[in-house]
Image (cartoon, rainbow, N blue to C red; front, side, top):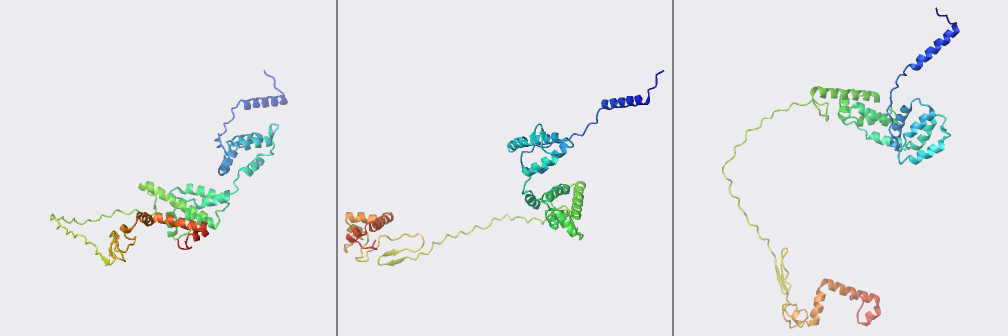
Length: 339
C-alpha cells in the first residue's frame, strides 16, 4: 500500500505535473497577417502603408517592432535616409526611442505630405460615383473627406455629395418630395436606391446603367405606308445651256487699246504720243522710247532699267553713294533727292 504524501509535498508534485502538461500542449496557432507593402518614399502612399505596418507588428516588443517596420522601407529614394536614420537612432544593439510612438513621430516628420489636405480637397471634388456601387463610392468619398480635414456634418460636404453622386439617383430623391436633411440621410437614400436598382437589373435581366429609374418603354409598331410604284418611263432629256461669254468693255484711244475684263492681254506696242508711231517702229521724233531709235548702249541701259530688280539695285547704289560721299556726289552734278 502506497504511503500518503504530506500536503506540502503533494501540492508541489501537483504543480510540477500541471507545468509539465502545460509545456507539452501545442500552443494555439495565431492568425497570420499579410505582410505590408514595401514603402519606397512615396508620400501619397505613406498613410496607407503606416496602417498596414502597425497591424502587422501588433504586440511585438519595441526594438523588434521598430526593426521590422524599418525593414519594409526600401528603395533607391530612401536607402540613404534609412542608413543615416539607423546610424543615428540605433546604438549598442537597441533603438533610442522610448516607444514605437516616438518612432512614428520621426517618420511623420519626413514622409507626411504637407499639402495632403489640399490635394485631398481637389480629389474630393473629382470623386464621382459613376457606375460604381454606392459602397465603393462612399468608401473613397469618406476617406477623402477625412484626409481633407473636413467633416461629414459640414454643409459644403453635403453639397459635394449631391453633385458627385449619380445624377439619376439624386433626381429621383428630389422627385420624391422628401429631401434628406443631412449627410447620413443622403447616404442612406443613395445606398438604398442603388441597391434596389441593381437588384432590379438582376431580376429583369437588364444591364443599362445610364438611367436606371425610367421604366423601359415598349417598342411601338409604326405602320409604314405602301411604297409608291416606280414609273418605267424615261425622264425627258436635260437641256444644256452653253455658258455665255462675259461681256468685254475695251477702250480705244490714240495710244492703243485698253482691254476690259479679267485676264485680258495688255497692248504693249502702243503708239508714241509725240509722232504717233508704234513703239516697235522707227520714230521720226528720234526718241529712244522707240526700240529701233536706241543705240546699243541705250538698249542695254534700257533693258536694265526696265528690269525691276536691276532698277532697284541701281537706285540703292545711288543712295549709298550719296550717303557715303555727299560732296563728291554733288560735284558730279547730282542733286540730293533726285535718286
